[in-house]
Length: 199
Image 1: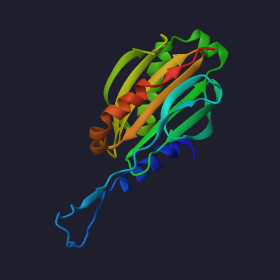
Image 2: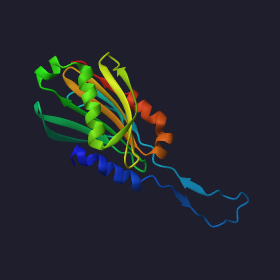
Image 3: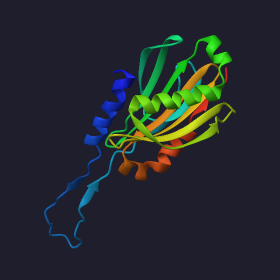
């Protein structure tokens, strides 16, 4: 699956998921009546994920799926490395994407320019409206930007982008407005867990 198709597929999955099941039981002849139970969504087992090349770590709800997509740009072909995890019965997807720049571009271009261009492209590609943005730094001082945006289908994405050693990282959580209210702390913890590992 390509990254351009990943977002619509996640959107379709999120619309279909997240329902609760109520168990109805017949009254029993016991002294204490039993309460009806509601099946809770399965809580994923979060674990530390280390990139295959060892250059970043992040907490993920299970082992993410990996895909490589090649895109043509004005700099030539660039490979996007995509890691995505979707916990069962939750309306959320956790995604990390990175790409390496040609050496000359990565060395000569201002990191803030790269971040601004990345923000412009993600909003344009997903046909989204920006909710908020702020400049940030990675845990070891690399320049970054945090943005939050909503697409036409109502899906909300919180994304942190970093430029480090000729590479652009994008760390995203994509969810519905309703699910965002219950997963706000989890999403923040996920974003905070991302670390660039210096070579």
